[in-house]
Image (cartoon, rainbow, N blue to C red; front, side):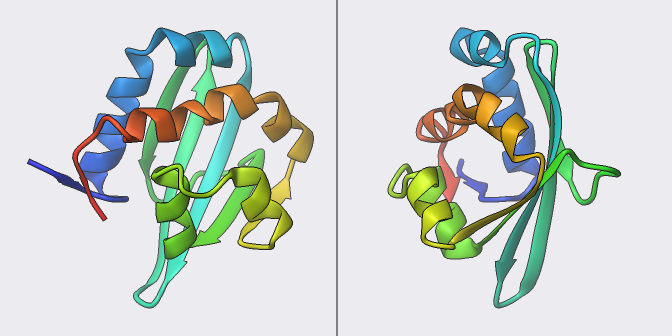
Amino acid sequence: MPVQFLSEEWTTELKGRLNATDSFKKAAGSASATLQQVITGPDGERRYWIKIQGGSIDMGQGEIETPDATITQDYDTAVALAKSELNPVTAFMSGKLRISGNMMLLMQLQGAISELPKVMQEMDVDY
């Protein structure tokens, strides 16, 4: 049964799959970061947070206090990134992806963050 993109079920399944993936654990290494994701759309904003620490990830719906970085994009961009139809660097350079906060930390986490769309490709997601 498909999970709805950006739903609580989606974050739970994505978190479980990432934590079970050796490539994510290796890419995350000993890095520590707290990220806020903001997805804008015609129905308003959807927010979820990501914590990476000790080679594992935690995710949830809503706001997180004092994120290291906030990543903002519209819904169509979020879908294209999730489906690997759009490169994150291209999205950033074209203004479709906006980042505030610690850009250097995000660059250091690029390997771990790039595992998210790989794992999403294996999920049954309703966009």
